[in-house]
Image 1 (cartoon, one colour):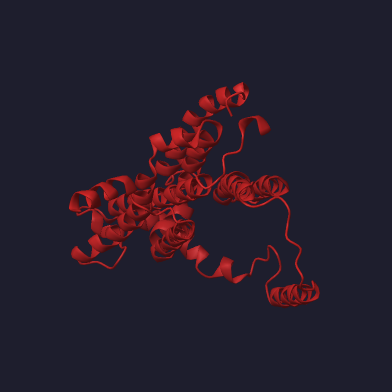
Image 2 (tube, chains in turn purple, cyan; image 1 turned 135 degrees about the vertical axis):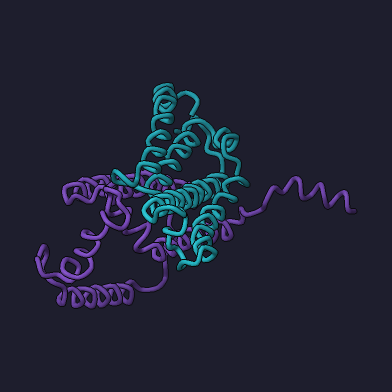
Length: 157
Length: 146
């Protein structure tokens, strides 16, 4: 519930940042599908959590350390909205300049994702495919038309 | 959810426009925000909402599970083969200019349209397949308990 509200709010935030593509995805995936999956997972498990015997101290230390490392990593990043960030001065200009000549479609995001970075998008699609196959394998729902197959086996027998 | 009349009526009204919007986002991605991924997710949401409010069995009549499993692979294959066609035309992998013999820009348009379709098919397939996989394991909750 709360994560759904959070997703919708961050979708609004992304719209104000002019990233409508991402806002779409956030609203549909974050506020829509992930909650459905979360709820259907909850119905599969039991109601009460098992009490763990291990102490909570080690996970807390690990999480804090990881957080500190991540924050340390952000120290090197350029300031928010700075004009001289690498993403602003390096290839982005080139994309904006060349998309009308090379591909001639108004939506530069689609041009970059589909054409200039076609390899990336192919990889992403493969990742999504792999994730889906993984879930299906774990849950054991990849049986292809089981009825027909058993019929065939019966015929062979 | 047989006794939730309002939900059922609203869902019936919404599923059509959701699908239409998904196709709009899919095929209009060159001109407006959106593309294959977004369209696939929206399409999956349409099917999932139908499956939740009516029954999953009804949703499976529209899109059977074996068909969804084929969709997963078909999208990736469509994308890859679009790239492979460029090989045979003497260009680099995924260079869509090879797709149209007359103009490189038209080739780019076709290429982007086809690969976005591939992405959309895979994404919607994955989302629906995961939903089916989770949902059909659920021990049926009694309708009155809601």
